[in-house]
Length: 190
Ligand code: GAR
Image 1 (cartoon, rainbow, N blue to C red):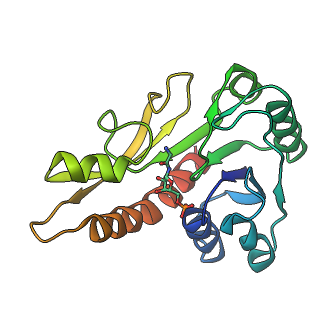
Image 2 (image 1 turned 60 degrees about the vertical axis):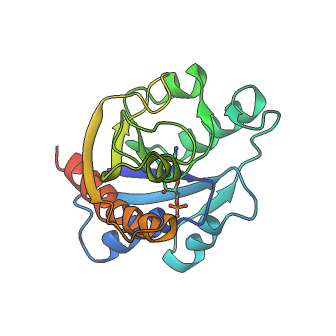
C-alpha cells in the first residue's frame, strides 16, 4: 500500500508513521512521498532522515483552502506518487471537490479530539477550555464536511485535575502517534 503524507507542521505524526514502518509495525504500507504547503515545515525535514522524497508544493492563491491552481498542483504531485492512501497528518487546509474526487475514498485525516466533538481548528484547546474530562483523537475518512467523514478509529485521553493545556496536548499527541500508524497498518492488511 503506497502512502502519500500531507502535512503543514512539525511532522511528529509523519515521524511516528515512518518510525513504525522502520520497526515493521506498518503492515503492508510504505510511505512513498511527503508533501507540504509550507516551505519551512518541519515535516519536510523527515524526508532526508527517512529516505523519502519530501517536497513543498505551492498552495496559492488561497490561504486556508486548497482550490484553484494550488489544488491542481497538489493533485498532480499526489498522482505522480500513485498512492493507495493519502494521509493528512496536520495538513491545515480545507479540501475541495477537485482534490477529494481525484482520490475518492482514499483520503484519511487525523484530528486531535473525539469527533464529532470539537471539529475545526485547535481541537485540543477547545476541549480543554470546555472542561471535558475525556478527550482524545480520531482518524476518519475525509469528505466535503470538514472533520465529518466516517470514523475509522479513536483513542481516548483522560483530562486529569492537574492537567494544563500543555500537558493535555502532550497526552493527545502521544495517543495520536500510536493511533495513526495502527490505523494505517490495519487498512493495509484489508
Ligand atoms: C496533530 O495534532 C493533528 O491532529 C492536528 O495537527 C497536528 C499535527 O501535528 N490536525 C488538525 O488539527 C487537523 N484539523 P504534527 O505536525 O506534529 O503531526
